[in-house]
Amino acid sequence: MSNDFENSQEYRKALEIAKKQQELYKNVTRAISPEALAKFQELSDKLNEWKNSLNNMPGLLKLVEMLKNYQQEVRETEGLTEAEFEEKYRSEIEWSEKFGKNGWVISEHSNPADIKNWEQLLCEGEAKVAEFFDGEDIVILDVIIDGLQEKYVSDETQLYFKNGMQAFENEDYMTAAMYLLALLDNRVNELVDFPNQRMSYRVKYSNDGFANQKAEDFRQLTEKRGFMSKKIYFLEMYPSLIAYLNRIFIDGLYKFENGIEPPYLNRNWLMHGRMNRSIERYECIQILNALSVIEFMFGDR
Image (cartoon, rainbow, N blue to C red):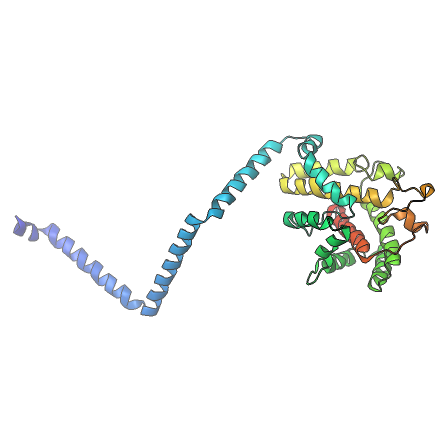
Protein backbone atom coordinates (compact mmCIF):
# COMPACT_ATOMS: atom_id res chain seq x y z
CA MET A 1 0.00 0.00 0.00
CA SER A 2 2.80 2.26 0.99
CA ASN A 3 4.73 1.48 -2.18
CA ASP A 4 1.65 2.10 -4.29
CA PHE A 5 1.28 5.63 -2.81
CA GLU A 6 4.97 6.42 -3.21
CA ASN A 7 4.75 5.39 -6.83
CA SER A 8 1.57 7.36 -7.41
CA GLN A 9 1.38 10.56 -9.46
CA GLU A 10 0.02 12.52 -6.45
CA TYR A 11 3.05 11.60 -4.34
CA ARG A 12 5.48 12.61 -7.07
CA LYS A 13 3.72 16.00 -7.45
CA ALA A 14 3.81 16.61 -3.70
CA LEU A 15 7.49 15.72 -3.58
CA GLU A 16 8.23 18.04 -6.48
CA ILE A 17 6.43 20.94 -4.78
CA ALA A 18 8.30 20.29 -1.54
CA LYS A 19 11.66 20.32 -3.34
CA LYS A 20 10.79 23.59 -5.09
CA GLN A 21 9.80 25.21 -1.78
CA GLN A 22 13.05 24.01 -0.20
CA GLU A 23 15.07 25.42 -3.08
CA LEU A 24 13.16 28.73 -2.89
CA TYR A 25 13.90 29.02 0.83
CA LYS A 26 17.61 28.40 0.16
CA ASN A 27 17.64 31.10 -2.52
CA VAL A 28 15.93 33.61 -0.21
CA THR A 29 18.28 32.97 2.69
CA ARG A 30 21.29 33.23 0.39
CA ALA A 31 19.98 36.56 -1.00
CA ILE A 32 19.58 38.08 2.46
CA SER A 33 22.78 38.77 4.34
CA PRO A 34 23.23 37.54 7.91
CA GLU A 35 23.29 41.17 9.03
CA ALA A 36 19.91 41.82 7.41
CA LEU A 37 18.46 38.68 8.95
CA ALA A 38 19.72 39.82 12.33
CA LYS A 39 18.09 43.23 11.82
CA PHE A 40 14.80 41.56 10.91
CA GLN A 41 14.99 39.47 14.05
CA GLU A 42 15.81 42.53 16.17
CA LEU A 43 12.85 44.42 14.70
CA SER A 44 10.58 41.46 15.33
CA ASP A 45 11.74 41.26 18.95
CA LYS A 46 11.12 45.00 19.48
CA LEU A 47 7.64 44.76 17.97
CA ASN A 48 6.81 41.88 20.28
CA GLU A 49 8.20 43.83 23.23
CA TRP A 50 6.15 46.91 22.31
CA LYS A 51 3.00 44.80 21.87
CA ASN A 52 3.51 43.17 25.26
CA SER A 53 4.15 46.52 26.94
CA LEU A 54 0.90 47.90 25.52
CA ASN A 55 -1.01 44.88 26.75
CA ASN A 56 0.43 45.33 30.23
CA MET A 57 0.30 49.16 30.42
CA PRO A 58 -2.06 50.31 33.23
CA GLY A 59 -2.19 53.79 31.73
CA LEU A 60 -3.72 52.46 28.54
CA LEU A 61 -6.85 51.35 30.36
CA LYS A 62 -7.00 54.72 32.09
CA LEU A 63 -6.73 56.49 28.73
CA VAL A 64 -9.53 54.39 27.28
CA GLU A 65 -11.68 55.22 30.31
CA MET A 66 -10.95 58.94 29.90
CA LEU A 67 -11.96 58.81 26.23
CA LYS A 68 -15.21 57.07 27.14
CA ASN A 69 -15.97 59.71 29.77
CA TYR A 70 -15.16 62.48 27.29
CA GLN A 71 -17.52 61.02 24.69
CA GLN A 72 -20.23 60.70 27.31
CA GLU A 73 -19.73 64.32 28.39
CA VAL A 74 -19.99 65.52 24.79
CA ARG A 75 -23.26 63.63 24.33
CA GLU A 76 -24.68 65.05 27.56
CA THR A 77 -24.00 68.66 26.48
CA GLU A 78 -25.34 68.36 22.94
CA GLY A 79 -28.37 70.58 22.49
CA LEU A 80 -27.76 72.65 25.63
CA THR A 81 -28.30 76.38 25.38
CA GLU A 82 -25.58 78.76 26.55
CA ALA A 83 -27.41 79.30 29.84
CA GLU A 84 -27.88 75.56 30.37
CA PHE A 85 -24.25 74.87 29.51
CA GLU A 86 -23.01 77.46 32.01
CA GLU A 87 -25.38 76.21 34.69
CA LYS A 88 -24.11 72.66 34.24
CA TYR A 89 -20.55 73.84 34.84
CA ARG A 90 -21.31 76.56 37.39
CA SER A 91 -18.64 75.43 39.85
CA GLU A 92 -15.92 75.50 37.16
CA ILE A 93 -16.97 79.01 36.11
CA GLU A 94 -16.79 80.25 39.70
CA TRP A 95 -13.37 78.64 40.03
CA SER A 96 -12.13 80.54 36.95
CA GLU A 97 -13.66 83.82 38.14
CA LYS A 98 -11.47 83.57 41.22
CA PHE A 99 -8.35 83.96 39.07
CA GLY A 100 -9.71 87.05 37.32
CA LYS A 101 -10.62 88.60 40.66
CA ASN A 102 -7.01 88.05 41.67
CA GLY A 103 -5.62 89.69 38.54
CA TRP A 104 -5.02 86.72 36.25
CA VAL A 105 -6.90 85.82 33.09
CA ILE A 106 -6.60 82.13 32.21
CA SER A 107 -4.14 82.15 29.34
CA GLU A 108 -4.08 80.41 25.98
CA HIS A 109 -0.54 79.42 26.98
CA SER A 110 -1.68 77.47 30.05
CA ASN A 111 -3.05 73.95 30.51
CA PRO A 112 -5.11 72.34 33.31
CA ALA A 113 -1.99 71.36 35.23
CA ASP A 114 -0.72 74.95 35.07
CA ILE A 115 -4.03 76.32 36.32
CA LYS A 116 -3.98 73.93 39.27
CA ASN A 117 -0.52 75.27 40.03
CA TRP A 118 -1.83 78.85 39.81
CA GLU A 119 -4.33 78.01 42.52
CA GLN A 120 -1.51 76.94 44.83
CA LEU A 121 0.55 80.02 43.97
CA LEU A 122 -2.37 82.34 44.77
CA CYS A 123 -2.16 81.16 48.37
CA GLU A 124 1.18 82.99 48.51
CA GLY A 125 -0.22 86.11 46.80
CA GLU A 126 -1.16 86.98 43.23
CA ALA A 127 2.39 88.13 42.43
CA LYS A 128 3.55 84.49 42.63
CA VAL A 129 1.54 83.53 39.53
CA ALA A 130 3.85 85.77 37.49
CA GLU A 131 6.47 83.03 37.84
CA PHE A 132 4.48 81.02 35.28
CA PHE A 133 5.14 83.78 32.73
CA ASP A 134 8.39 85.32 33.88
CA GLY A 135 10.25 82.74 35.96
CA GLU A 136 13.72 81.34 35.44
CA ASP A 137 14.05 79.64 32.02
CA ILE A 138 10.41 80.61 31.26
CA VAL A 139 9.76 82.25 27.88
CA ILE A 140 5.97 82.68 27.95
CA LEU A 141 6.20 86.42 28.60
CA ASP A 142 8.54 86.77 25.62
CA VAL A 143 6.09 84.82 23.45
CA ILE A 144 3.24 87.11 24.56
CA ILE A 145 5.23 90.28 23.88
CA ASP A 146 6.34 89.05 20.45
CA GLY A 147 2.77 88.09 19.56
CA LEU A 148 1.37 91.46 20.60
CA GLN A 149 4.12 93.29 18.73
CA GLU A 150 3.07 91.50 15.54
CA LYS A 151 -0.56 92.53 16.15
CA TYR A 152 -0.03 96.16 17.00
CA VAL A 153 1.11 97.68 13.72
CA SER A 154 -1.45 100.49 13.30
CA ASP A 155 -0.40 103.98 14.36
CA GLU A 156 -2.20 104.25 17.70
CA THR A 157 -1.79 100.66 18.92
CA GLN A 158 1.84 100.55 17.85
CA LEU A 159 2.61 103.84 19.61
CA TYR A 160 0.98 102.88 22.91
CA PHE A 161 2.47 99.40 22.93
CA LYS A 162 5.94 100.64 22.00
CA ASN A 163 5.92 103.32 24.70
CA GLY A 164 4.45 100.93 27.24
CA MET A 165 7.08 98.27 26.58
CA GLN A 166 9.91 100.80 26.61
CA ALA A 167 8.81 101.92 30.07
CA PHE A 168 8.42 98.27 31.12
CA GLU A 169 11.98 97.45 30.05
CA ASN A 170 13.21 100.53 31.93
CA GLU A 171 11.38 99.24 35.02
CA ASP A 172 9.16 102.33 35.04
CA TYR A 173 6.10 100.21 35.75
CA MET A 174 3.71 103.06 36.54
CA THR A 175 4.25 104.62 33.11
CA ALA A 176 4.08 101.19 31.49
CA ALA A 177 0.76 100.46 33.20
CA MET A 178 -0.72 103.78 31.99
CA TYR A 179 0.06 103.00 28.35
CA LEU A 180 -0.94 99.34 28.58
CA LEU A 181 -4.24 100.03 30.35
CA ALA A 182 -5.13 102.63 27.74
CA LEU A 183 -4.34 100.04 25.07
CA LEU A 184 -6.42 97.41 26.90
CA ASP A 185 -9.40 99.77 26.99
CA ASN A 186 -8.97 100.47 23.27
CA ARG A 187 -8.70 96.82 22.21
CA VAL A 188 -11.66 95.61 24.24
CA ASN A 189 -13.90 98.30 22.77
CA GLU A 190 -12.53 97.67 19.28
CA LEU A 191 -12.93 93.89 19.27
CA VAL A 192 -15.89 93.01 21.50
CA ASP A 193 -19.43 93.33 20.16
CA PHE A 194 -21.00 95.30 23.02
CA PRO A 195 -24.77 95.98 22.82
CA ASN A 196 -24.06 99.65 23.44
CA GLN A 197 -20.64 101.29 23.49
CA ARG A 198 -21.94 104.01 25.81
CA MET A 199 -23.02 101.69 28.58
CA SER A 200 -21.36 102.11 31.97
CA TYR A 201 -18.25 100.13 32.80
CA ARG A 202 -20.24 98.27 35.46
CA VAL A 203 -22.61 96.90 32.83
CA LYS A 204 -20.07 96.63 30.01
CA TYR A 205 -17.64 94.46 31.94
CA SER A 206 -20.20 91.89 32.99
CA ASN A 207 -21.94 88.91 31.41
CA ASP A 208 -24.67 91.31 30.24
CA GLY A 209 -22.13 93.49 28.47
CA PHE A 210 -20.53 90.49 26.77
CA ALA A 211 -23.90 88.88 25.95
CA ASN A 212 -23.78 89.47 22.18
CA GLN A 213 -20.19 88.31 21.84
CA LYS A 214 -20.73 85.23 23.97
CA ALA A 215 -23.89 84.27 22.10
CA GLU A 216 -22.10 84.40 18.76
CA ASP A 217 -19.11 82.43 20.05
CA PHE A 218 -21.41 79.79 21.54
CA ARG A 219 -23.31 79.48 18.26
CA GLN A 220 -20.14 79.11 16.19
CA LEU A 221 -18.52 76.60 18.53
CA THR A 222 -21.73 74.57 18.65
CA GLU A 223 -21.92 74.46 14.85
CA LYS A 224 -18.27 73.42 14.62
CA ARG A 225 -18.80 70.81 17.37
CA GLY A 226 -15.88 72.42 19.18
CA PHE A 227 -16.62 70.98 22.60
CA MET A 228 -13.15 71.51 24.08
CA SER A 229 -12.92 75.05 22.69
CA LYS A 230 -16.35 75.76 24.14
CA LYS A 231 -15.19 74.61 27.57
CA ILE A 232 -12.02 76.70 27.36
CA TYR A 233 -13.88 79.82 26.24
CA PHE A 234 -16.95 79.62 28.47
CA LEU A 235 -15.60 77.91 31.57
CA GLU A 236 -12.11 79.44 31.73
CA MET A 237 -11.37 82.45 29.54
CA TYR A 238 -14.65 84.38 29.59
CA PRO A 239 -15.19 84.09 33.38
CA SER A 240 -11.63 85.08 34.28
CA LEU A 241 -11.44 87.85 31.65
CA ILE A 242 -14.71 89.50 32.67
CA ALA A 243 -13.76 89.29 36.35
CA TYR A 244 -10.37 90.87 35.61
CA LEU A 245 -11.83 93.71 33.53
CA ASN A 246 -14.39 94.33 36.26
CA ARG A 247 -11.61 94.69 38.80
CA ILE A 248 -9.45 96.92 36.59
CA PHE A 249 -12.13 99.33 35.36
CA ILE A 250 -14.71 99.46 38.17
CA ASP A 251 -14.11 101.10 41.55
CA GLY A 252 -16.38 98.77 43.49
CA LEU A 253 -15.88 99.30 47.19
CA TYR A 254 -12.85 101.50 46.59
CA LYS A 255 -14.43 104.79 45.57
CA PHE A 256 -12.47 108.03 45.74
CA GLU A 257 -14.80 109.50 48.34
CA ASN A 258 -14.16 106.61 50.70
CA GLY A 259 -10.46 107.41 50.64
CA ILE A 260 -9.46 103.73 50.72
CA GLU A 261 -7.08 102.78 47.93
CA PRO A 262 -7.58 99.32 46.40
CA PRO A 263 -4.78 96.82 47.09
CA TYR A 264 -4.58 96.08 43.37
CA LEU A 265 -4.21 98.01 40.11
CA ASN A 266 -7.31 100.01 39.17
CA ARG A 267 -7.58 102.26 36.13
CA ASN A 268 -9.43 105.13 37.80
CA TRP A 269 -7.05 105.36 40.74
CA LEU A 270 -4.05 105.25 38.39
CA MET A 271 -5.25 107.63 35.68
CA HIS A 272 -6.66 110.19 38.12
CA GLY A 273 -3.42 110.42 40.07
CA ARG A 274 -4.81 108.97 43.29
CA MET A 275 -2.38 106.10 43.86
CA ASN A 276 -0.02 106.26 46.83
CA ARG A 277 2.11 103.24 45.99
CA SER A 278 4.42 102.06 43.25
CA ILE A 279 3.19 99.65 40.60
CA GLU A 280 5.07 96.37 40.44
CA ARG A 281 6.32 94.36 37.48
CA TYR A 282 3.80 91.54 37.90
CA GLU A 283 0.90 94.01 37.56
CA CYS A 284 2.11 94.97 34.09
CA ILE A 285 2.45 91.27 33.24
CA GLN A 286 -1.20 90.86 34.23
CA ILE A 287 -2.19 93.52 31.68
CA LEU A 288 -0.01 91.96 28.97
CA ASN A 289 -1.56 88.57 29.65
CA ALA A 290 -5.07 90.05 29.41
CA LEU A 291 -4.17 91.75 26.11
CA SER A 292 -2.87 88.45 24.75
CA VAL A 293 -6.06 86.60 25.70
CA ILE A 294 -8.25 89.33 24.15
CA GLU A 295 -6.35 89.13 20.87
CA PHE A 296 -6.53 85.32 20.97
CA MET A 297 -10.29 85.28 21.59
CA PHE A 298 -11.51 88.19 19.48
CA GLY A 299 -8.76 89.18 17.05
CA ASP A 300 -8.51 88.09 13.40
CA ARG A 301 -12.27 87.83 12.89
